[in-house]
Length: 474
Ligand SMILES: *Cc1c(COP(=O)(O)O)cnc(C)c1O
Image (cartoon, rainbow, N blue to C red):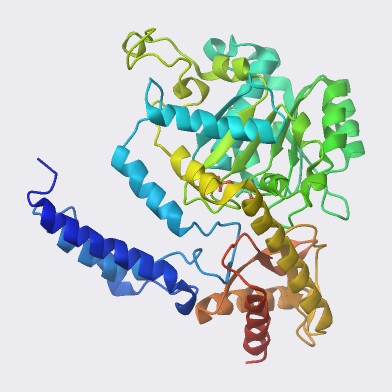
């Protein structure tokens, strides 16, 4: 009923669409890195729900005019804002294939389920997790961190908490993370009902890392005051500076104190694929759970993240429920237990594992690791450029792929200098030459360049600094 009435016409249209999509990616370097959505386009996209068909051609025309040109920019070679992956051409095709299959990977016995299992197993092996570990792909690390907090809660309180909710002793559960941990970690504590106040956010050291001794002291203080420390969260690549907490020391502390050790490795965990960077992440293989994204540093199209849990049964006990219409059988389509739906909150789940599988099959893990290492080398290159130019100053150490610096405008200090750099970052975006974002590091507003971009080359960083120099003096 909703399939094309004329397949050969639809085929011709679709081939044109595919060509447009590939043209776009082939020429993206020549496009502005960002452009504002014009008011008339915004108006167009507020039109009410149409009752009459525009046809595929009509819908596509509107897409080409009002949507495609105003893409968020993270596919561009000079996109360095926040932490956003670039996607890839073959990733787009993998998405097309996944949508064609339209597999529901909540569970059962069909091909897509085995693909997701394989992807999860690859990453269990990478991080030294046992075959009995649990894991699922999720929308992103925000969801992955949330799931990890829920599993840790089950671990601390027993599955009874699923019926009873949080009461009595459970209200005294405390956890620990650095002040540079991602805001979604705090959100996970809010959403899990544990309360963000129970997440003890501790100041970082001069390298922006969580000091193990400070965690130990906070745990002791909380125990003495009658709290129940249960979880320690290390960051493998903080969003502001790319700092990696001392994971091995934190793992040791967690073991000694009987805490659940979780690692938020949204982008940083993928550095494990690069042998030269692996030592920075020492200790991640001791985690009870790890959250990370495929859509950031593995360049898999949005959205695709993952959570791994060393104790797979604990993950299952957190989410699994028995319902008649989801009865398992030994054979047939209803077999294939356990189902992914038992390891997280979603029943229906898309086939996001396919694009991950494709990326790894197509390129192989080594090449993906090399792309990550190259981004780190580019960060060092940019750092050198910044250090060489007295107009700029570095405001945080460059340990991984993030460079925080500012334009030291003569005669400006404090808030005025902060405002200047904020404005400069916006003007850079508006120029369409490159996109950086801004953040506050060590009390000052900085231009933040985060490199998770397989399309960037060294000259892009020369172009970036030239643009900033020019915009700053205009
Ligand atoms: C991006 C990021 C997150 C959130 O991940 P999403 O995929 O955006 O949900 C969490 N932690 C860190 C360190 C991040 O960089």
